[in-house]
Image 1 (cartoon, rainbow, N blue to C red):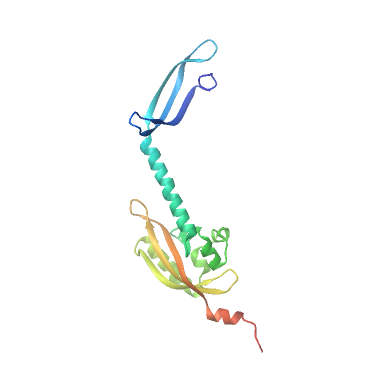
Image 2: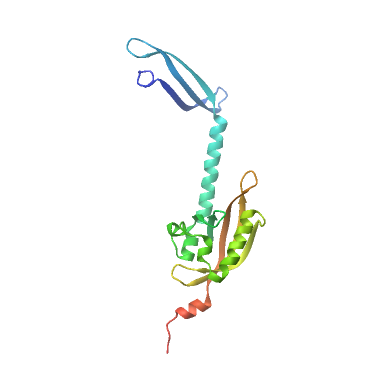
Length: 193
């Protein structure tokens, strides 16, 4: 398009093979500085920069993100990724099945919203301590109030995930060893009297 006079500038990335057989990535940019009477390019000026390291870093990041996504989504336990104030960023299917909410419903809630009301003050305080960095994590047995109103008990492990510079970034938690609360299970059974 540049050579035909349709555009003045160009930027492109492409891979080349060196004499030694290594692949390198180049980013080339330039512009037409002279055209003939028909508008075709006669002279171009530009630069090429070796961007192999950047491309390799981007590929490594893509691979790492994919590995995290697959591990998170296919974990045999319920997984949650939360903001520092308990807003859900991501949940896996196992967690949704356990609490009975969809990912879209959870996105509009906070983690403390599905706990027992009498446990919320402690839950908020623990979350605040983790978010501030005063506590790196904890494990507790927690009663969840499921979407249908029933209760389920799970072992909740919460960990602080720090940013590259060491600041609190977000919270990762998992839920294991679940069981239906016997009181709720009994209260939901039909009466034989």
